Image 1 (tube, rainbow, N blue to C red):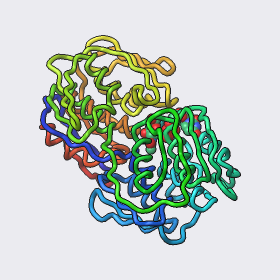
Image 2 (image 1 turned 120 degrees about the vertical axis):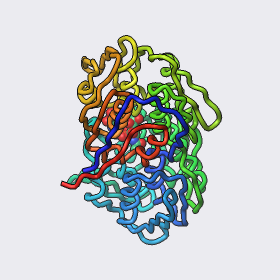
Image 3 (image 1 turned 90 degrees about the vertical axis):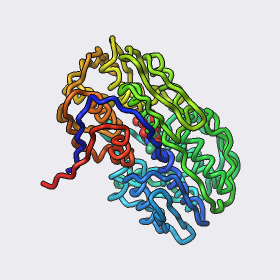
Length: 420
Ligand code: UD1
């Protein structure tokens, strides 16, 4: 079992480069199913989740080759199967992204229901309702979502909630449908615009991505092409918080600060200095941060994927802060781990109240999920003494070589593989 070991409390500074966005890469790789011509993707993050979705594509008959660390080539020109294998899908819920493109291309799809995960139940009812509205007959058979259609016909779809995954799945389903589809109350996350830009590069006709109203004019087929995945805003945000709690300055390279406005506004309110340029930001703080309050919301509100990391900053800020989580019902598992390091946090239903302490102290802790794991790394870096983080496969799902990159900022951080 691998672990991350940290001797914390050192001020950190330097430059760190952000990788391609996991949450953009996963739907975009699924979107390859829509094209029968070669597709090349660059700036793909070197993460296990990317390998998993590539394996899902291989398993249905698509040639997927990793030509270098961050570059993949795909060829979906052959015959493909409508059925995604349970063994792969169960390891990663984002595999469900293949449902929309399979339905669009083959007029049939059979994909195991992804099930919940540590942070919530995470149903896919909004995806399925949208497929039905496009003309598919949807049923649940032996744990799989099954959709079949004679034809998909464009229509007006209003989402009950601006689900990121449902918006992406429905964009992909509508790309090859007949006529025009409008998705209202669509999610506005930057990854949705990246997916639309990718599909448009291949010849799709999608307008309005990044706004609540997306219009997709169906086309008969998509061509091939090359596309570079956007930078990961959650990684960039994680490093911005690090700059604020470890004094900095930390220059976060290859990011779009416009994707991080909700976070950088809060960091400034807490007393950090955030400078921004076209594709970088620099985070630093001269003094102890001040308390603040956040509520997670769909984009452009404060991202749920950043609340655990900002909570770490709140743990050592001066005063009482609060975090209200409105997106996922069980996303406070990092609270008990932070408490083991000396944080003073109470949870009242969906709100965590954090009374800032002068210092956290190193301890053995667990990465309970991906972003909670990032929060534990930040906590270990700012804490006095030695921290050992276990269950780090969660962190590996979302951060490429996190330890290597952070150690270049002057941190005493290593990774060990334990064989028991
Ligand atoms: C995506 C991100 C994830 C992020 C989340 C919210 C990817 C691969 N993952 O997840 O990192 O935390 O957005 O920003 O991009 N819901 C339903 N029914 C549905 C779909 C969603 O009830 O059919 C609920 C979910 O249970 C959850 C909320 O809506 O409570 C938000 O989910 P959604 O926006 O769909 O998140 P994901 O696409 O799963």
